Amino acid sequence: MLYLGPTSLQSPARHPGAERITDWQQYYQQQAASSSNSLLRQFYQAGMLAGDTAIKDVPLLALDIETTGLDPANSGIVSLGTVPLNLQRIYSSQARQWLVKPRFALSDESVTLHRITHSDIAGAPDLSDILPQLLQQLAGKVVVVHYRGIERPFLQAAVKARLGAGLLFPLIDTMQLEARLHRQQPLSFWQRLRGQRPVSIRLADSRLRYGLPPYRPHHAVTDALACAELLQAQLSRYYRADTPLSQLWC
Image: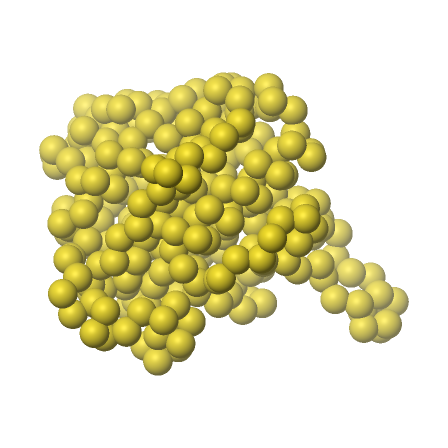
């Protein structure tokens, strides 16, 4: 994932539709019946769990996307990493990573951050070539990300550009879970006067609070693994195994 400045952290990117969906199971059923694209129809036909499903019974897929910028309207995807997991296990042997050619040119900042260069993507496939594999991995699973303002809106825009219709799916945002713990109350005047800063809820800093080891940042499959481990730590410390999805996803 790219560097997220203070404004981005406080104001996640919004994208049409997703924030208004309250019943993901019903949404998938509707899309399965109405989608004119065979790939998307097959994805939605896999179905989605109900919101009252206990987290211990939920198949999850940690997802990280590296991009050329922060705005899906003028930035593209350069790599994707996925790691399947559930409450008990992380299936690292099933982790996948794809390098793809973005719809928009690499920026100097993105090359510096994720170290993916023009020569790296010269022979890379377009996202449309790996979509069948990606959608197969996503099908039926609840996606886990750290900061929902990247993965869902970028995939929504990228899929819509290629298939003529967007892709929406429920996710659990580990940054949002940390924000519930550490960002509910703004700092008081006296705290700000003493120079106190809000607790960092970035991925690396959040992991440190749970005693998780540091990993190389801005590498898609590694960030996906880091996110998967963070979620398991969060659930173990603050949630019960029978916590319903409706309390965790968005």
